[in-house]
Length: 424
Image: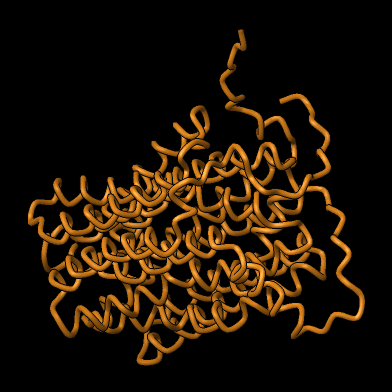
């Protein structure tokens, strides 16, 4: 008789460098979430235009999308840790300059805000592929799912605190003080990364041109229907079902709850995601993973429709909470699929393709939300987006039937050298 043991919930935490990575993740998540609250609320306060919020997302997406594939190429050629240290330093400087610009408000303020967001997007275009590839070198492949759950958990916990704290600081300190704290947290994230020991870089193929290198990442994703299908699910769900960019309008004009309510609304999805990710550290979704992914995206779409139709603040918070619950488990599965099915020497380029599909869908979704809200009205555009999300799930299930039989306990992964385990 075989006795089945429960997976080690603290497997990833037994690596010192992974604990340092968690510290860096907390600082980065807090900084980015607080920045999202401050910049969105400030832009809407200056313009009173939903389209301006859409342009805000596009300004960051342009460099992030345009440079992602190039960033993936260099992430597989240069030291990933060094790339992260440089890009996090650029983000820190942008936060400092945002504080300076906000303290000297003038007619040029909006242009300067957009310009600094653009620079931060450039840093993201190079930093995100390197970050995804670097994380896989911290723990062995057998611990990837547990590591994804922990990274997601601390990220979502920070995402709860960040928007809430950002809303409170906006109401009491103003945008200048909020940006100052964002800069301090970004600096703490840089220190966490600096404490991680360097990792050997995979040896790239000799005489491979930049064009061939970039195309190989695209071809790898195209040949794997499971990776491609999971990316497409998230792309279209966030593109059409995302509501984050319009939350300042709901907080100000529809629910009338002000900046404090906006902070709570931005934190609600993170609270739901945190709950389910902590659950995944003990009960990883390794069986029927593809089916769970499809059902989770469908649940996300239903929750978006409920949020759009709600006129009660607490019901709206509950709907946003469940968008996080469904997206949290989907995030764990998507990251595990990407990392378990990609060889290390390709991870920077494949992560860059993922950024095109997933990472930039938030900003492109913000533009879509702004345009749709201007054309159809804010509420109608949101519930229509939820319906489109449900249609996307049906199309992907039909076009990628392998997702219906996917189990993450039998991945197609390249064996990884096991990092040294130390005591916690």
